[in-house]
Length: 222
Image (cartoon, rainbow, N blue to C red; front, side):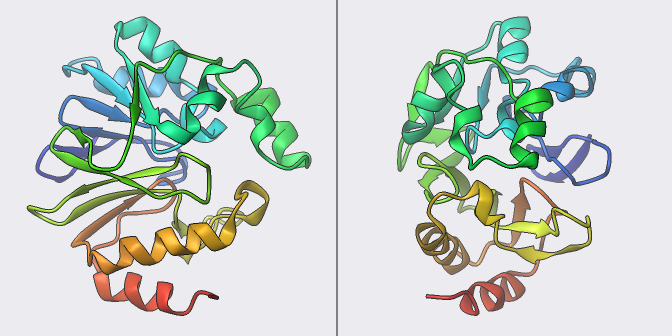
């Protein structure tokens, strides 16, 4: 586990930075795929974790959510718009267009449905971070923003690696898994305007260059 900022840790994974999980204070942010349970539990074994929050309910972020919440006896939180997908059996798997990639996700990545104890909305507080509603990649996608030191948990509004090659660099999320790309671009513009000192992505290494983030977002289609 690597400390990125005060009370913000990135869990180790393989390949590095491919599917990121964060521990923010005593809240676990995202839970990788169904195969991620073991590596997550090993790394948080000596930590106090009181809740689990999702940036969004996609298979590579909620895959181990049910197992971890059950094992630790902690509540699950996610954006209000993603509650139906998270709570409905098959809801997460049915959220993307059919393709070989979605077949793999449904077969190997998707975690079971799990009740959501808290539906996150704009302005909520999670471990010292403010919830920002950032829909587009999913209906209930949220980001987490700590203004005091300008740390941002981006989720998948943008990625900082090419999902297909693993090469670092800023990208929009894949269109096949983004039901509303124009709305997602609006969310990206909102986040870039914050000028985060540290941006932590669902996929890709952290970025500590707000100008680079702003320049990339400025080139996105309207």
